[in-house]
Amino acid sequence: MNQFETYTQRVIGGYRAFLRTPADAFAKPIMSKGGRPELFPNKLAAVEAVMLHLVRYVNGHLYRHGEVAGETTATADAAFNQVLKQKGKTRVITVAYRGKSSRCQRK
Image 1 (cartoon, rainbow, N blue to C red):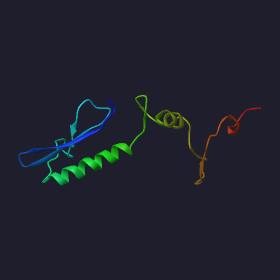
Image 2: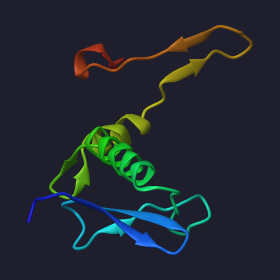
Image 3: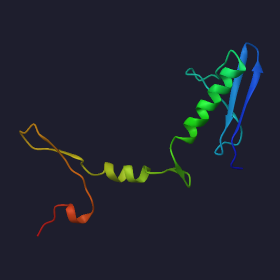
Image 4: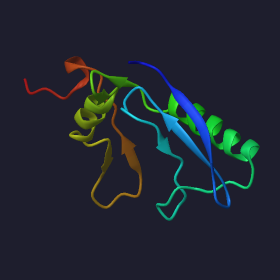
């Protein structure tokens, strides 16, 4: 289930590289910018591309139960104004919220 798979396939004109991640049911080809499978001149170039994509996947976003970790915190932080500008002033004030105690409260 939770396994990676990489392989290359010889085709007319070169090699294609494939990568399967635990989130996918089957191996997918490494795609070029045009949305087509990338064609490599030799097997070494294909293997290097697979390794690069594998490292990018492992070092990429962390997933937790099907969602990107930290996404809900970013959504909550976006609801508050982080930068305040005073009317007629050029200075920018950055606001950092750290719980209820640091917010302005009416007395």
